[in-house]
Image 1: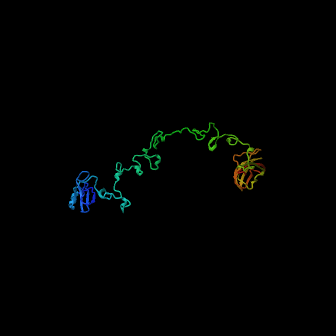
Image 2: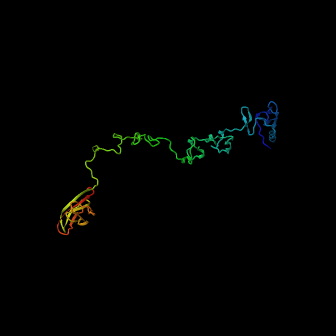
Image 3: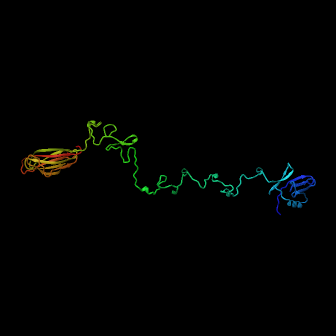
Length: 352
């Protein structure tokens, strides 16, 4: 047997009610009896008033009562103190009247209701998300690498050149330009032969030769000695030689030999060269000795008044501190005075 929900209103009074609404109950407080309006009558009343005598009969009678308009499943009977009636109303409980309720609830699965076209669709902007189709300003892209397909490449004013572009390997002359006063051809001004100087802010510019301040002296210029200021009064000489030609003369008799000390202790190295002799007759033997040791031995001499130049001239170089001597020996076969003279040249080094 199926359950039936019906709109019910209960009246309280004394005796049998004269009229009732369809499905309306009335209770006789004196006789302790229960009545119900049954059927559809006129004027909004039931066709008849039926007493519900026993529970089985009452339940059976209620089951046969037609459901009136305005009632819904789940309605409850509510007593109206203003009218004294029980009326059917939708069940309603104030939220504040519910005790021990949780502070939060786990929602039931409902994601599909938020999809596009769902009953509670959410737009991307509602949750701070971007739409599926959107764009970004260049300033918004702060990391990552853009795919080359996203970059316009080519050879126009609105494209960029890619790394393997053949144009990057071509030799190209630069466009005409200047660097300060330096032209594209590397010139400063148009006059040749001028010096270069720096001007304002260090910019290169053409200078001039002259004797005024800010001008340059040419490489072939000269200065009078008196024009040179702050010059020293003396100068240390550069390394140089002193060359002097000396002569030793006298008489010698065979087999006599005479020794002439040229220097007891030479202060610096010297070189003896160009040794020549002249004699009144015959020849003489000339030796150069360094500390008594022969360093050259040559027979030279020429009768007459001129100094001869023998084929082999005695020469020697001796170190500083040496004792240099010249030994002359008469080579005539019989004793007789022989007049001679020996010329020699001494050259010293290192300013000696």
